[in-house]
Image 1 (cartoon, rainbow, N blue to C red):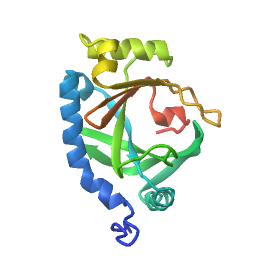
Image 2: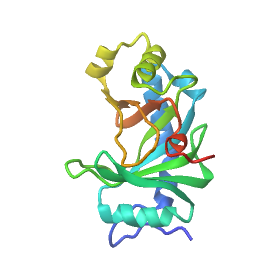
Image 3: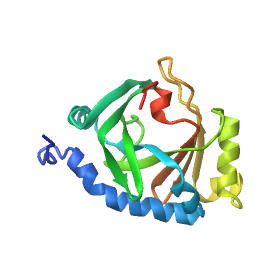
Image 4: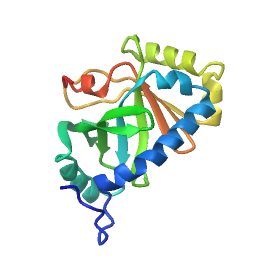
Length: 197
């Protein structure tokens, strides 16, 4: 049974996440429009959406709640903190995209977060799984904006997460627009953690 938000502890629940999906989808579309890449991204798959939670206690509780709505397919330390990937039994709709994966990280100690949906990760088509190739394709997608403009006008980063396991490499480009994270990588997170969809 899906719990409602625990008012005493103000915990984020799966019900809260579902209630945020429409607004988050609207904000995602606005961010993609601003970058001029909405039509391209409509042709891509979102393999997962990230849920940020500000307290460790809430992450633990939410992870327990999500285990009844999906299967935990990975739960390992990545870049120094535990990140869980949950494969949902039913799709989560973010606008026209059907999403099956949820990323649930424990918070970084030196960061503050708003509880809720934070970013999506698009899977690029026919791109080799290296940072150079991911970067090249992303810059093709966002042209005529160049990398310097992205860094100047938006949050832009490149990351190759270091996981304490034998999972596949996951070079990722991130762009944040008006608080919405848009990430790109060459293979789905399910493939990264060796989960057969």
